[in-house]
Length: 58
Image (cartoon, rainbow, N blue to C red; front, side, top):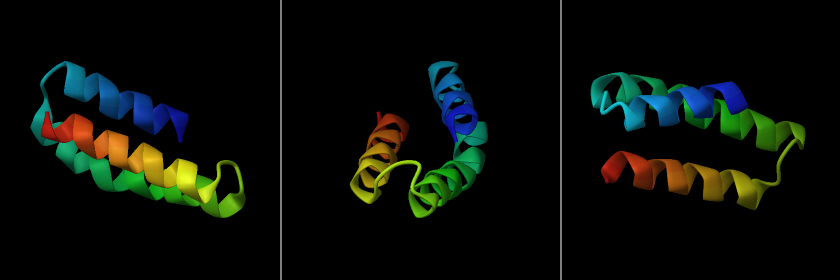
């Protein structure tokens, strides 16, 4: 999960929005998978997804 989120943040910082949009579903998938397995809590996963979405918008 951590690797995919870092890759997404790096793409956003480099202003590569097209690549970032393609990576977004897999970022969500990894966060949800981590929450399902109990690595992070459900609300923490929701918060991460929300913050990632805000990055994309701005």
